[in-house]
Length: 263
Image (cartoon, rainbow, N blue to C red; front, side, top):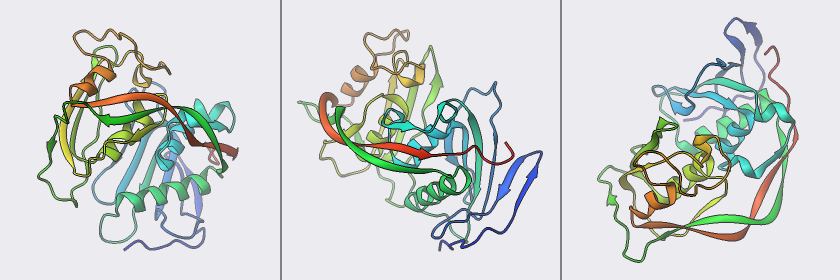
Protein backbone atom coordinates (compact mmCIF):
# COMPACT_ATOMS: atom_id res chain seq x y z
CA UNK A 1 0.00 0.00 0.00
CA UNK A 2 1.32 3.46 -0.91
CA UNK A 3 1.62 5.75 2.08
CA UNK A 4 1.18 9.49 1.37
CA UNK A 5 3.90 11.81 2.61
CA UNK A 6 2.15 14.94 3.80
CA UNK A 7 4.94 17.30 4.83
CA UNK A 8 8.59 18.09 4.18
CA UNK A 9 10.66 16.25 6.76
CA UNK A 10 14.17 17.42 5.97
CA UNK A 11 16.48 18.74 3.27
CA UNK A 12 20.23 18.24 3.45
CA UNK A 13 23.10 18.60 0.99
CA UNK A 14 25.83 16.01 0.66
CA UNK A 15 28.49 14.89 -1.78
CA UNK A 16 25.91 12.56 -3.25
CA UNK A 17 23.38 15.24 -4.05
CA UNK A 18 20.29 16.66 -2.38
CA UNK A 19 18.17 14.39 -0.21
CA UNK A 20 14.56 15.21 0.58
CA UNK A 21 11.20 13.82 1.41
CA UNK A 22 8.26 14.85 -0.70
CA UNK A 23 6.13 17.86 0.13
CA UNK A 24 3.16 16.68 -1.90
CA UNK A 25 0.08 14.80 -0.78
CA UNK A 26 -0.79 11.51 -2.39
CA UNK A 27 1.61 8.79 -3.57
CA UNK A 28 5.19 9.99 -3.12
CA UNK A 29 8.70 8.63 -2.82
CA UNK A 30 9.72 8.22 0.77
CA UNK A 31 13.19 9.58 0.05
CA UNK A 32 14.63 11.01 -3.17
CA UNK A 33 18.13 11.98 -4.30
CA UNK A 34 19.06 14.16 -7.27
CA UNK A 35 22.55 14.90 -8.53
CA UNK A 36 24.08 16.05 -11.83
CA UNK A 37 24.80 13.17 -14.18
CA UNK A 38 28.32 12.26 -15.20
CA UNK A 39 28.95 14.34 -18.36
CA UNK A 40 30.75 11.35 -19.90
CA UNK A 41 27.85 8.96 -19.29
CA UNK A 42 26.33 7.41 -22.42
CA UNK A 43 23.38 5.28 -21.31
CA UNK A 44 19.98 6.59 -20.24
CA UNK A 45 17.26 4.71 -18.42
CA UNK A 46 14.15 4.81 -16.27
CA UNK A 47 13.99 1.57 -14.28
CA UNK A 48 13.42 -0.24 -11.02
CA UNK A 49 16.43 -1.45 -9.05
CA UNK A 50 14.90 -4.12 -6.87
CA UNK A 51 11.39 -3.71 -5.49
CA UNK A 52 11.84 -0.44 -3.60
CA UNK A 53 14.09 1.83 -5.66
CA UNK A 54 13.28 3.66 -8.89
CA UNK A 55 16.01 5.39 -10.88
CA UNK A 56 16.20 7.88 -13.73
CA UNK A 57 19.75 7.98 -15.07
CA UNK A 58 21.29 10.70 -17.26
CA UNK A 59 18.04 12.45 -18.18
CA UNK A 60 17.08 16.08 -18.74
CA UNK A 61 14.08 17.58 -17.01
CA UNK A 62 12.13 17.53 -20.29
CA UNK A 63 12.87 13.84 -20.74
CA UNK A 64 11.69 13.26 -17.16
CA UNK A 65 8.49 15.19 -17.87
CA UNK A 66 7.96 13.13 -21.01
CA UNK A 67 8.31 9.92 -19.01
CA UNK A 68 6.07 11.09 -16.17
CA UNK A 69 3.26 12.29 -18.45
CA UNK A 70 3.71 9.88 -21.39
CA UNK A 71 4.71 12.49 -23.97
CA UNK A 72 7.31 12.81 -26.67
CA UNK A 73 9.65 15.69 -25.69
CA UNK A 74 8.57 17.37 -28.94
CA UNK A 75 5.25 18.13 -27.20
CA UNK A 76 6.91 19.89 -24.25
CA UNK A 77 7.72 23.59 -24.53
CA UNK A 78 8.90 26.36 -22.23
CA UNK A 79 11.00 26.10 -19.12
CA UNK A 80 14.30 27.54 -20.32
CA UNK A 81 17.21 26.02 -22.21
CA UNK A 82 18.60 24.19 -19.16
CA UNK A 83 15.54 21.92 -19.01
CA UNK A 84 16.66 20.41 -22.33
CA UNK A 85 20.41 20.31 -21.63
CA UNK A 86 21.22 19.71 -17.93
CA UNK A 87 21.18 15.99 -17.13
CA UNK A 88 20.45 14.41 -13.75
CA UNK A 89 20.61 11.10 -11.93
CA UNK A 90 17.50 10.63 -9.78
CA UNK A 91 16.77 7.93 -7.21
CA UNK A 92 13.41 7.50 -5.48
CA UNK A 93 12.98 5.15 -2.53
CA UNK A 94 9.57 3.50 -2.42
CA UNK A 95 7.37 3.48 0.68
CA UNK A 96 5.49 0.42 1.92
CA UNK A 97 6.20 -3.28 1.73
CA UNK A 98 5.23 -4.29 -1.81
CA UNK A 99 6.35 -2.93 -5.15
CA UNK A 100 3.98 -0.23 -6.41
CA UNK A 101 2.20 -0.47 -9.74
CA UNK A 102 3.45 1.38 -12.80
CA UNK A 103 0.61 3.90 -12.37
CA UNK A 104 1.57 4.58 -8.75
CA UNK A 105 5.22 4.95 -9.73
CA UNK A 106 4.33 7.57 -12.35
CA UNK A 107 2.29 9.50 -9.76
CA UNK A 108 5.26 9.47 -7.40
CA UNK A 109 7.57 10.65 -10.17
CA UNK A 110 5.14 13.45 -11.05
CA UNK A 111 5.12 14.47 -7.37
CA UNK A 112 8.93 14.50 -7.35
CA UNK A 113 9.05 16.84 -10.35
CA UNK A 114 6.57 19.22 -8.71
CA UNK A 115 8.42 19.13 -5.37
CA UNK A 116 12.09 19.06 -6.31
CA UNK A 117 12.00 21.02 -9.60
CA UNK A 118 9.04 23.25 -8.62
CA UNK A 119 7.42 22.23 -11.90
CA UNK A 120 4.15 23.84 -12.93
CA UNK A 121 2.59 23.65 -16.40
CA UNK A 122 -0.60 23.94 -18.42
CA UNK A 123 -1.99 22.04 -21.42
CA UNK A 124 -2.59 23.46 -24.88
CA UNK A 125 -4.46 21.35 -27.46
CA UNK A 126 -3.17 21.67 -31.02
CA UNK A 127 -3.55 19.82 -34.31
CA UNK A 128 -0.15 18.34 -35.06
CA UNK A 129 1.47 15.59 -37.16
CA UNK A 130 1.24 12.20 -35.44
CA UNK A 131 1.88 8.56 -36.21
CA UNK A 132 -0.86 5.99 -35.78
CA UNK A 133 0.19 2.43 -35.03
CA UNK A 134 -2.07 0.04 -36.97
CA UNK A 135 -2.13 -3.62 -37.96
CA UNK A 136 -0.69 -4.42 -41.40
CA UNK A 137 -2.85 -5.85 -44.18
CA UNK A 138 -1.63 -9.42 -43.53
CA UNK A 139 -2.23 -9.28 -39.78
CA UNK A 140 0.16 -9.10 -36.81
CA UNK A 141 3.24 -11.33 -36.68
CA UNK A 142 3.81 -11.08 -32.94
CA UNK A 143 3.33 -13.77 -30.31
CA UNK A 144 0.93 -13.44 -27.41
CA UNK A 145 2.78 -13.57 -24.11
CA UNK A 146 2.22 -16.43 -21.70
CA UNK A 147 3.22 -14.28 -18.71
CA UNK A 148 0.46 -13.11 -16.42
CA UNK A 149 -0.81 -9.52 -16.26
CA UNK A 150 0.99 -9.02 -12.94
CA UNK A 151 4.38 -9.49 -14.60
CA UNK A 152 5.93 -6.13 -15.47
CA UNK A 153 6.50 -5.56 -19.20
CA UNK A 154 10.04 -5.75 -20.51
CA UNK A 155 10.58 -2.67 -22.67
CA UNK A 156 14.26 -1.74 -22.51
CA UNK A 157 16.05 -0.63 -25.69
CA UNK A 158 19.57 -1.96 -26.05
CA UNK A 159 22.39 -0.89 -28.33
CA UNK A 160 23.72 2.47 -29.42
CA UNK A 161 24.49 4.46 -32.57
CA UNK A 162 25.69 3.77 -35.22
CA UNK A 163 25.21 -0.01 -35.08
CA UNK A 164 21.49 -0.13 -34.37
CA UNK A 165 19.04 -0.68 -31.55
CA UNK A 166 17.28 -3.77 -30.23
CA UNK A 167 14.03 -3.87 -28.29
CA UNK A 168 13.31 -7.33 -26.85
CA UNK A 169 9.71 -6.59 -25.82
CA UNK A 170 8.17 -9.03 -23.36
CA UNK A 171 4.63 -9.10 -21.95
CA UNK A 172 3.95 -5.68 -23.47
CA UNK A 173 0.68 -4.16 -24.63
CA UNK A 174 0.44 -2.20 -27.86
CA UNK A 175 -0.34 0.92 -25.80
CA UNK A 176 2.92 0.46 -23.88
CA UNK A 177 4.84 -0.12 -27.10
CA UNK A 178 3.36 3.03 -28.71
CA UNK A 179 4.21 4.99 -25.56
CA UNK A 180 7.86 3.91 -25.72
CA UNK A 181 8.10 4.80 -29.40
CA UNK A 182 6.82 8.34 -28.86
CA UNK A 183 8.85 8.99 -25.71
CA UNK A 184 12.20 7.61 -26.82
CA UNK A 185 12.43 6.89 -30.55
CA UNK A 186 10.23 9.09 -32.75
CA UNK A 187 9.66 12.83 -32.86
CA UNK A 188 5.84 12.71 -32.96
CA UNK A 189 3.05 11.34 -30.78
CA UNK A 190 2.28 7.69 -31.56
CA UNK A 191 -1.40 6.73 -31.22
CA UNK A 192 -2.25 3.06 -30.73
CA UNK A 193 -4.98 2.18 -33.25
CA UNK A 194 -4.19 -1.52 -33.58
CA UNK A 195 -7.24 -2.75 -31.67
CA UNK A 196 -4.98 -5.45 -30.16
CA UNK A 197 -5.76 -5.96 -26.48
CA UNK A 198 -3.43 -8.81 -25.45
CA UNK A 199 0.16 -8.71 -24.20
CA UNK A 200 2.89 -9.70 -26.62
CA UNK A 201 6.48 -10.91 -26.93
CA UNK A 202 8.52 -9.70 -29.92
CA UNK A 203 11.95 -8.47 -30.94
CA UNK A 204 12.34 -5.21 -32.83
CA UNK A 205 15.70 -4.27 -34.33
CA UNK A 206 16.39 -1.15 -36.38
CA UNK A 207 18.98 1.40 -37.52
CA UNK A 208 19.03 4.29 -35.07
CA UNK A 209 20.31 6.97 -37.45
CA UNK A 210 17.50 9.42 -38.10
CA UNK A 211 15.66 8.76 -34.83
CA UNK A 212 16.07 10.46 -31.47
CA UNK A 213 18.23 7.53 -30.36
CA UNK A 214 20.59 8.77 -33.05
CA UNK A 215 20.31 12.37 -31.75
CA UNK A 216 18.34 13.52 -34.78
CA UNK A 217 14.84 14.85 -34.16
CA UNK A 218 13.35 13.79 -37.46
CA UNK A 219 11.77 10.60 -38.77
CA UNK A 220 14.19 8.18 -40.43
CA UNK A 221 14.51 8.01 -44.18
CA UNK A 222 16.74 5.31 -45.63
CA UNK A 223 18.81 5.28 -42.45
CA UNK A 224 22.17 3.50 -42.72
CA UNK A 225 22.73 1.21 -39.75
CA UNK A 226 24.61 -1.63 -41.40
CA UNK A 227 22.11 -4.34 -42.27
CA UNK A 228 19.39 -2.92 -40.02
CA UNK A 229 16.12 -1.57 -41.48
CA UNK A 230 14.83 1.83 -40.45
CA UNK A 231 12.19 1.95 -37.72
CA UNK A 232 9.28 1.97 -40.17
CA UNK A 233 10.46 -1.11 -42.05
CA UNK A 234 11.34 -2.86 -38.78
CA UNK A 235 7.82 -2.35 -37.43
CA UNK A 236 6.35 -3.67 -40.70
CA UNK A 237 8.21 -6.94 -40.07
CA UNK A 238 6.03 -7.32 -36.96
CA UNK A 239 2.89 -7.12 -39.09
CA UNK A 240 2.28 -3.56 -37.88
CA UNK A 241 2.55 -0.19 -39.58
CA UNK A 242 3.14 3.45 -38.69
CA UNK A 243 0.92 5.84 -40.65
CA UNK A 244 1.52 9.58 -40.81
CA UNK A 245 -1.52 11.76 -40.18
CA UNK A 246 -2.71 14.70 -38.07
CA UNK A 247 -4.65 14.81 -34.81
CA UNK A 248 -5.43 17.21 -31.97
CA UNK A 249 -3.01 16.46 -29.15
CA UNK A 250 -2.17 18.11 -25.85
CA UNK A 251 1.02 20.16 -25.73
CA UNK A 252 2.51 20.51 -22.24
CA UNK A 253 3.72 24.08 -21.66
CA UNK A 254 6.09 24.56 -18.71
CA UNK A 255 5.09 27.66 -16.76
CA UNK A 256 7.81 27.38 -14.12
CA UNK A 257 10.74 25.10 -13.26
CA UNK A 258 13.78 25.47 -11.04
CA UNK A 259 17.06 23.60 -10.82
CA UNK A 260 17.12 21.39 -7.70
CA UNK A 261 18.52 23.34 -4.75
CA UNK A 262 22.20 22.73 -4.17
CA UNK A 263 22.97 21.24 -7.61
